[in-house]
Length: 238
Image (cartoon, rainbow, N blue to C red; front, side, top):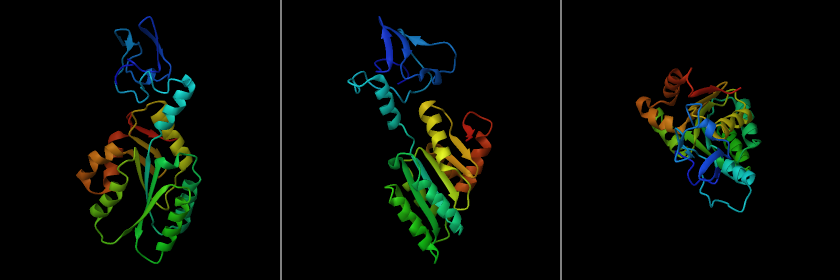
């Protein structure tokens, strides 16, 4: 994967590569000069846009790029913990159901105590499901943080980025997802953590690697933020 050999987006003349038609090479190298092997571009990490020469060969380059981009929209897994802010929960629900984002790339879990307010959570779940977005409600039965959180995040295991917020949290979902998709998909960013106000989107790979050390998502998130702030692996969504 770490070269452009046999890729449909590699423009090659007389056996020598002239450029990357997808425009991604510049994001995949640590140096400014073009690195080649046998006349073909090489890079420092895998290219998500690499496709075989025969891939959609009847389509134009522009169409191929659009198809590849749609394939690479990051999956976003959201856990929203109901902290009895009904107004906040409804606001977050309205944002989610009105998102301009592939619905099959979203997974939402509402997490709350089993109480008389459960109807609020149930109604919000139904509103999101109307958009054909995968949405579940999980009710806390026992006061065991590890067991409860593990059951939640197992359901979000296919996510590219995971979010865990309270219903009273501030976040602009449309702005956040547009930003993450642009960085992850278009710029092939190595960023592992994106933050928008109260919302912290963490690479699921990082969560899987770190969670067992803490067995508490909040403590894990704080530790991760301490590690990544000031590095290329952390970005504030602007």
